[in-house]
Structures are given as C-alpha cells and as structure tokens.
Length: 151
Picture 1 (cartoon, rainbow, N blue to C red):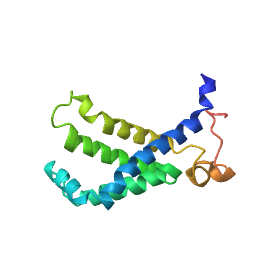
Picture 2: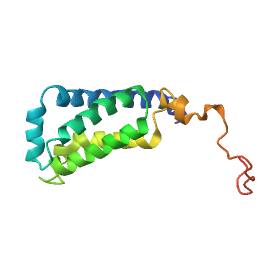
Picture 3: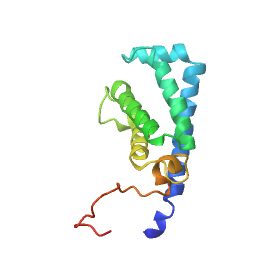
C-alpha cells in the first residue's frame, strides 16, 4: 500500500478543508445572526448563554485556521474538545447507544483529534513554519551518538 502513502498530503489537505468549511459555516451564524435562539438552546442543555460567542469565535476562526493550515494542531485540538463537550452536554444524555444522535459531532471530534496529532501536512502554512525544520537538523548540539541506533 505504499502507493497510497503518496496521497497523504492530499488527504490531509482535503480533511482540513472539509472540516474548516464545516466549522466556519457553523461558527459564522452563531456570531452574526442566531445568537438569541442559540443562547436559548445552550441554556436548555445547561450551558451558559455566553458560550455561544466562545463557540462561534472558536468555530469561525479555528475553522479558518484549519482551512489555510496555520496553527492547525492547536485549532484542531480545541475544536475536538468543543465537539466532545457538545456530545457530553447535548447529545448523549438520552442514551449512549443511540449513536445516530451524536454521530456528526463524533466524526468531527475524531477527525479534529487526528489532525491535532498528525499535523496539517506539507500543503499548509504550518509545514514551512513548524514541521519541516527549516532544513536544519533537529539533533541537539554536542550530542553524543546513540550506541543503540545507527540511523
């Protein structure tokens, strides 16, 4: 399956783009339009109303950061945490076995966690800034060779 490894940069780009667009499309209305209705929905589930603004900012700007691939690991981690909290407070009180009630936030949470752990990939703004190493060796200066590893 080595031929599929060549598609990893494209797959990470597509996953980032899809999640970024999804989160931005949910975050913008929270900040621009449906604030009072969303606050009432949050309050109905025991979440303070001002969390609408926190969630809206996180989804709009975190989704935008994921879309362009900048600070992807942090944005994806925060969005994964938000989705887990959403599942915990809104979707799962009915039944943990009713997967259809929380399937959408579950997929978003797991996908964001995957992006948080793997990074944005080479087709991103993160790659030249944080992940490529800038062409420099990451080995510390004055380090002694490891007698157990010759690679």
